[in-house]
Image 1: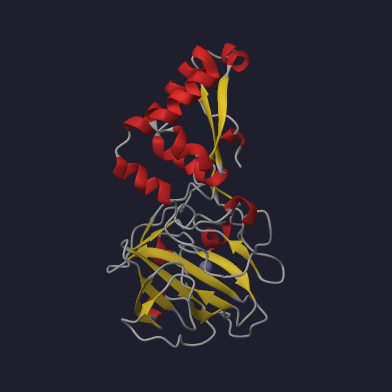
Image 2: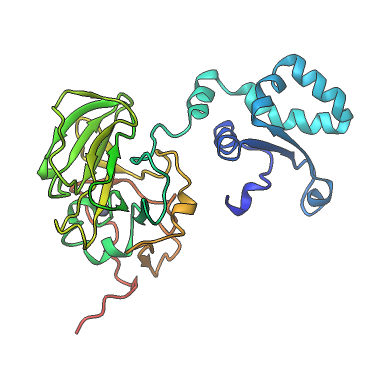
Length: 302
Ligand SMILES: [Zn+2]
């Protein structure tokens, strides 16, 4: 959890709140009704368990809670939950659903199963190859790399329809797979061991085995991994950061393994694109996003 997870000040939006609710399994409602630093000593908060929320935001639940808290606590509670009451149902429904996709493996991460080795975005590895391997993707690593032994089963990250098998114009040799999802995204699985035994137009279910991990060098010893992208279905000309779209503990995954975990820096704007969550969308064929005149790490030349 980020350092701001133990307290977030009023006002806050319903989508942010629900997202945190889902991640933490509970919600700390806080109302900073006085100015800091006084707020720190007078902070009014109540912790609500996730499974009690529906009862709590019902009219009867609110009345019961007000009776329990007394007048000051009740004021804090009402100030805190009013975004829930005002938010349109459609907005809540979207955010309660959380990220639309799951991970592409049915085993938990670990040294004998799989680990993240390169995140999506402005990675140092992509930066050094921005004019070659990653030029078409604006110089960014436009997928996430998950290291696993050759032959590790890969599962579909969501329900969908097989759109392409071995479409090598999208790269990620020797074999790849594109699945279209009904929400408008497509998932792309690269560096597969074998041509997937699937037909274009075939329906697949989330969690169904669709392919096997391979190695771009086809040795199964140098760097076997799955390169996973999320694109726009149909046109496939944009790539999106998978972090907000795949339900996973990305912060913990980032703590282990990796051949390129750091992000390239533009020393004239050194904080930009330095977090996994803060990586730009790729538009294939667009200009390089990281052709920095003053980069870190520097490009040493002989
Ligand atoms: Zn990759």
